[in-house]
Image (cartoon, rainbow, N blue to C red):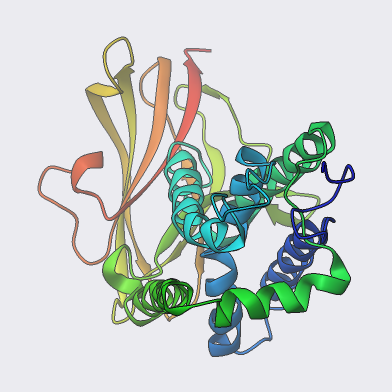
Length: 315
């Protein structure tokens, strides 16, 4: 007998799981907005969400159907989705982070959250649409049956289910613990980004793209260092970049300025003037070193870097 459209193989059709993803994303956004929330509380809530929710939305979009049969257990059920969601979430976060490194914003909390939100929302929309397009075989969790289904997953119908559930929980806890206990393994919480002044406020927008040789342009560089760093050395340069090959290659570099930023555990914003000395289609680059600068400053040996594509004219 065929199941009614919009129902799960056990009669628990619905989109309670997608609604839960929306709630989780809202909670994550709220945590980032409420800066007064203790760090340990934000980490305890945000890390599990980041390690599961974006990936679950992606998995829901990729697998809208319940492929099970009434007489066996051959289907991608909730447990399988939980396992895939952890790996997919890591993939989403890493992909967003890598993409941001090629922008002026860098891998910072707010831009990263915007990117993760965008991926999650798009995946949710695709999941909802694809579920509606299935012919009575869509995967779903109805709100009244959500508790019983989660309990069934956690308790299981046998030793294999219980063992798999333990593996999933251990994977999530291990990943979360690694992220929280060793935040300095990547960049120690350090970041660098450019700001401009707009109506008396500093914003990460409206960057100058047209510069003139020997004419100063005011910018603001925000830097926060890893634990234990007391100062940062910043090298400002104009790079001529060749993008015709695989990736970007710096063919020439003209250093414009070099200054030291004192770090006090918080984000330090330094106002400075950029005075171009050469013309062309160039990349304004800030190379940030926590401590002394390298003898030969270049993007490959900088602790952090910020780029801004500009056109410099002679007049």
